[in-house]
Amino acid sequence: MNTIRIATYNIHKCQGMDGRTRPDRIARVIGEINPDVIALQEVLSIAGMRPEWNQSAYLGAALGYHWVKGETRRLHGGIYGNMVLSRFPFENTKHHDISVPGREERGVLRADVEVNGAVLHLFNAHLGTSYFERRQQAQRFLTADLLRAADIDGPRVVLGDFNEWTRGLVTRLLSSEMRRVDAHWKLGRAYPGLLPLLHLDYIYYDHSLDLRDAYFHRSRTALVASDHLPLVADFRML
Image (tube, rainbow, N blue to C red; front, side):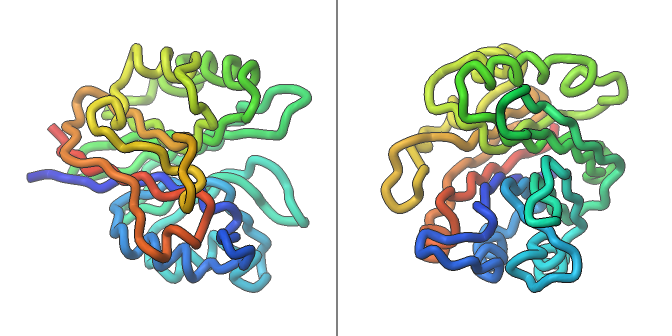
């Protein structure tokens, strides 16, 4: 069976629920999941610094994955934004700025990976906290720049922290074109991890992918490593 495990995880700059910045805990959680591809949000990368500050380089080296980062904005003189780790080499990567004027900068990192001869197109997103901000960002998804780009020739997966805890325009637009893992598997709430009140993290996927399993990873380490829990999905590529 041609299966692939995909996950999304907002690592909160590796700052845990105990206030400590521990990229080693994030690496341990990812190792527990054992994903083929994982999308990370809120990653801080300051070149030449300790692992606590150069998180992308540390995680890539510690886990032995191919990795790419997308710069949403500058923070403490370094790069802050999204990251994708993959067991498969990248065919293409591109960062898309979806910021709304007057709001915090936001981005979508596209990463194409080849899986057994087929190209899988992943879109790692971190959307805004304002309802009206997300409405504009939702409309950007279904354009020729992103999900309808001319060079897309394989299944698409859109995943990340959508900051949408009600059925807003992001949900409606993406659900009109793709499937959502929590529409088929009852996942419950997962934010914040220790006392979950909201559901903010999502995975959408094309109909050519067959969802086999989906869950929030709730190990003891995951409950303290970040304020989000990783969302994991297993797919069979048809």
